Length: 445
Ligand SMILES: Cc1ncc(COP(=O)(O)O)c(C=O)c1O
Image 1 (cartoon, rainbow, N blue to C red):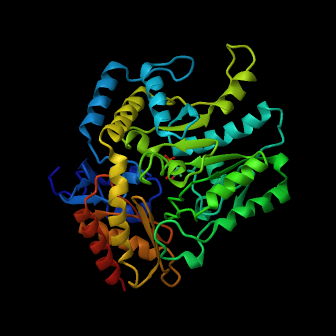
Image 2: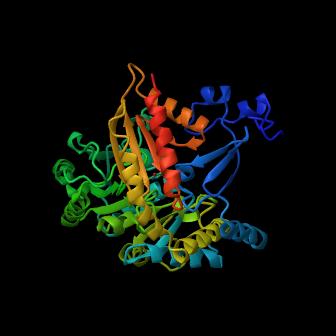
Image 3: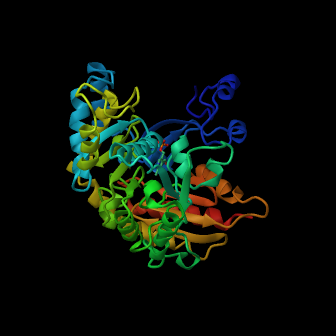
């Protein structure tokens, strides 16, 4: 392979053989965008260019790529113990990591169930919620409530409570669920950070309770800040109101923190940042800095105890659920290294310090053609792009492709452009990125 071979030496047959995830395969294969290596905040493309990673991978590599401490931890672990059975046996790092995770969680979250991804965390949390009520003798509490524009991964539970239509439309009947309305109000367009208006939308839960009855509802699941739908920060007071209604009606509140946990909000969790404590927290992504797939569901002790108390004989399995790769030793090693770096290098405070510069720079794009909204919180930001006639998602795609050509990776999803900057981003990098984005949007037809 020559250093500037855009195909990295791949044959047509090799390219054709890979059915790529969440990708326009036909388009990609006409003009592949191949990444061959990465270091810090930059990818190296097969055609020999440096590409700034403005989404931290897929919201997962906040510490940048190839962090030496994570690389070393993974190398050592794979040599020492590459795999050990997830069921009926344990290995030390699984327990060390679960304790370390609890240091990042709100007080009282002290039991960790491992999964392999954010999607598995979503379905695991929904199953735990249903089983919890059954163990308590309330087996009619099964209904799950999500939110319009919510994203909880791609498994059947997750797409049922999820609220992005395109992710559900072709898959038929899934799990019975209902949805709260989303919180993107027209009057909140171009608001920096959390909008003031919209807490009242939480009261829609009362309508759903009136419709289904709380005796039939297991849980409400929301992202504290909706990420994949295009960075939708919660209106002030909204999450508190959801919490209060859930408390008053004995409904579990699940926060899907797959994007928001471990620093992106400038805090350990969205729960911490927004001052609302759920019953269950889902995590993944930043847990291992994206180096090895891993997720987890973290619960308060009373939930865990409910399963133990109703578990029958001690040798019996209390929760018949888990994955071959739950608590994978190499993922645990990557997770421990990642969380240690976040703590020792005080990275999350760094996110909080640089976030205002990002906010200021991003909102300078207001007024450019086709930008219908700008939203941000911490090191997450998004633009809503006005639909081209009959082609609602064309412009974000064109913007992302042109940004790639200019040396910046940004995500396009639906009618949005999404940014999830690396935690070590500099003001200079922010300004270069936003300038390039502005120039690209100005140049659109
Ligand atoms: C809030 C949330 N939940 C779940 C997921 C799914 O995670 P994964 O792609 O690891 O399955 C994502 C991914 O973006 C997410 O943002």
